[in-house]
Length: 267
Image 1 (tube, helix red, strand yellow):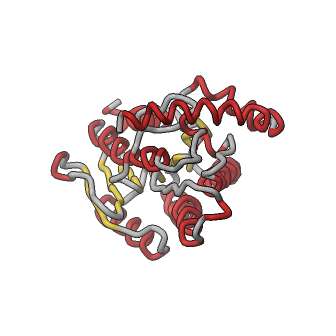
Image 2 (cartoon, one colour):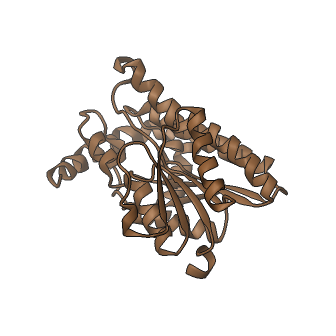
Image 3 (tube, one colour):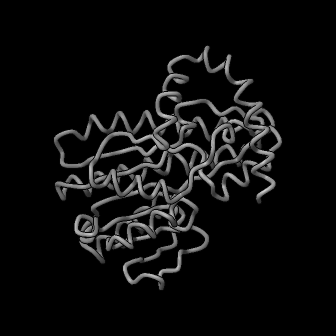
């Protein structure tokens, strides 16, 4: 593992978040040089000499220029870009404030497109590179009361699949990691919303499992990896049949409410 990743230059957005920090730690332990982009609190770069933190607000296109220029200036190339920055604001859509809606769209989707477009130009010039987007099962199966978040992940999934075809033969790969619920502060926040339930209808996985999936997909690129695997068939089946999802939603909601109560007891 170290021999394959030890010479990589990897940019991670959302590097101080629950998922991002786990990815940064895993890849840095494999010996890769990590440029960790953060907006609020940086990871402890002193903990590992190959982690380099940079503060950026990626909603602004010029901040993407800052991040990519920093990486090229210091390392001369970008082997992998991992888009793990994201935000979720749960609640009934009709009551949601417009600034919260716009923030999710801007950070979860629009800014990702900006970064990918700029990075593709760099990677095509290099003749190699790999872009990895962190999606969600909420981009396959609808998430009532997290509808805007779900919409951004649906959009990201469709975009990734489309760009994968455009990039064939260029030496540049693009992948999507699609996890179920992940035990992070974001999930804790979602649990505080009275109506949110579907995210708790299955057992949350740890950020470490997402980080492990990142390592595997760097080693063996594929367009999509769904984790846990046990949810791959069921999620695609529900996505294939909206009528089936509608029929099962009441059951999933009831299970989710029950499991969320247990989840909240451990916070």
